[in-house]
Amino acid sequence: MENKKILFVINTLGRAGAENALISLLSRLVKTDRYGQLKIYLYVITGQGELFSEVPEGVTLLNKTFSTQSVLDKCGRRKLRKTCLCALVKRLNGIRNFPYIISNLITMICRGNLMPDKLMWRILSDGCERFTDHFDLAVAFLEGGSTYYVADHVDADKKFAFVHVDYTQAGYSKKLDRDCYEKFDKIFSVSDQVKESFLNVYPCFRDKAEVFNNIIDSEKIELLARDGKGFDDGFTGKRIVTLCRLTMQKSLEISAEAMRLIKSRRKPEDLPVRWFILGEGDRRKNLERYIKKLGIEEDFVLCGSFDNPYPYMADADIYVHATKYEGRSIAIREAMLLGKAVIASDTRDNRDLIDDGCDGLLCKLDAAALADMIIDTIDNKELTDRLGHAASVKEKSVPDDTDKLMSLI
Picture (cartoon, rainbow, N blue to C red):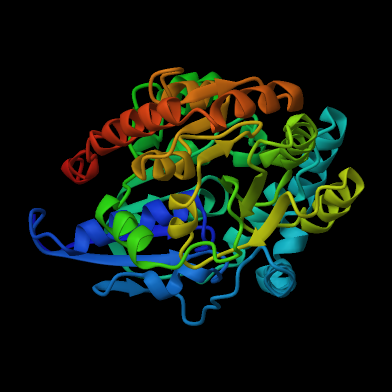
């Protein structure tokens, strides 16, 4: 394989699971000569995200301009809205896509599941820069904007798409996609459950569908966990850590209520417990009000986003990830890699990742049930050590699927 040109496209380059997985995959590709002479290109639909500074040397960035602002903080959301407005007027996209927007908006309202961000991916995709280059392979690394862009606006011999989430629960549909997946040669899902969810919508693409384990740079994560600075707040009790965006999907109100129950049930002689949320998002103000209402401001702490969250994860006594749905959660896998005992919500996707009772614990997404499990686990060092060790061994044995991707071109 010589002089192969490969384009990767992703929606944003913020600090989230899929984005981190892409950076790890790109690093793997540029550091090896196993696949011959590769010319690797990257294009980011929104031109925004903190991870631009971590794009590996050897990858050509096609964005003429970009911003390292998060799409989740206040300034970043303002910039993203400006990008969306520009895309609406560019090439008269707002007018051309008006029937598409209205039709899908009505469908969402009728279903009681309004997701305006899903409507904007088509507009952003059509408003992006266009390139005359021909590629041997174009990879859409996320659902929505990057998939629409690669399908409609990229010239390539082969096109691959990645699906990272439970397709229907995340709000996607055939109507939104407008038959874009017909244009792809291969559709990679990050787990068996994600694959089956996608095929429930698109059974005709079963021959194209395949599971691809996201790449995690274990050496880098372990190094960052050791070298970085963790908590320095002087707290000497038990720490629960969650790494996630502050969004509806993450169900943090349930976690906050669980923390209130834990606090109320701890005996005076027990070590105090605090729950630390690492991440940012559009639900921050709502969560702050709810946390204040529960009276747990010192116990359920919204820490914000960190360039290096791994020392904080390493400081955790247990790692909890109680969300409505996931794909194959990168955050859970990172916590397992670092030898943490993980408690996760009992979803189809998490069942695919955790062997309940062996290398982690699965719990009903309910505040009382979650509180009970945390109380039963957090003081049991023998249990947390056993689960953490098994989790680390399991995560380190996950196969590297880079060859699966490259063999197809």
